[in-house]
Length: 337
Ligand code: NDP
Image (cartoon, rainbow, N blue to C red; front, side, top):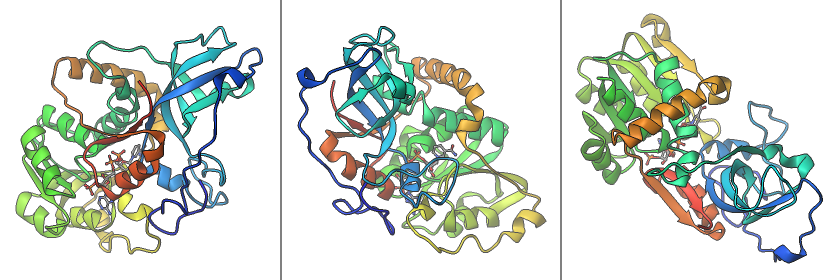
């Protein structure tokens, strides 16, 4: 992480790829230390939020300038002086974007858990399908949104990591689902593979116009991943007592000073309940929701698309591509088998 971006991060300026030599035989470990080979790294929108002035405090720290960015990843122990983590063990943790990581014993709190592979489910699923994306979808829909069968829900960024799960869970629960995404391919996926009742490309059709067409009876629930003009349109189509699940506002992450929705008075007049949430406040629910998702996947009731960039040298392009919406599905980097 080389520089705080002004808007969309720029490769070579804000984020730079640095090559260093690495020789496993030269690494000397003290008792408790071990070396991880990184297999997968997750690419998430909130990484952009971490590329900020560290003086701006929030629920998650800013990235440190001059250091590798960090995020959820999976690695395999390839050298170890730690009996808890012997060679071959797979670990999940908040990892620096590097191919190899020496974890010293007094800094091993970056490790979150030992990963147990589940037959029929790929390892990468721990970074999305069974992890952050799963918890975000469940917590948002059930704990915040309290969805009910027969209601109409609108989901933005619906083909992304969180969105595709929200859409499918809402359909399984008997809701009418309207979805938006940023390309014709994504709209096809939403309609034909995920079974959305209606889906539109917000770059072609203004959300305000599309929602009028597709939700003649208004919206009961909005799962908001993008904020901005889409949120404004959802407010204007909301029914009385609608619930707005404020999960993220990616349309604002790369732009400062954009006007927010201009019709916030509707929250009062329609008695809308609008609630933001951050999944780390709901850790006590993670295990339950992961187990539910495992069952749904094994029963073939949920599908999950990933977009994988291969090699650490392609991580920057993968991250920027995810922020721009270039690719369909959960964004990941795969570094090794
Ligand atoms: P996605 O896989 O959905 O990737 C981001 C997507 O956002 C892009 O693919 C793009 O899709 C869309 N997008 C980008 N710019 C815009 C824009 N200007 N207007 C509308 N859409 C845009 O990411 P995730 O599923 O991981 O995250 C989705 C949301 O959930 C984010 O806002 C994220 O911050 C939030 N989140 C919140 C959590 C919480 O605890 N509250 C936890 C995890 C995620 P398209 O082609 O459709 O434009």
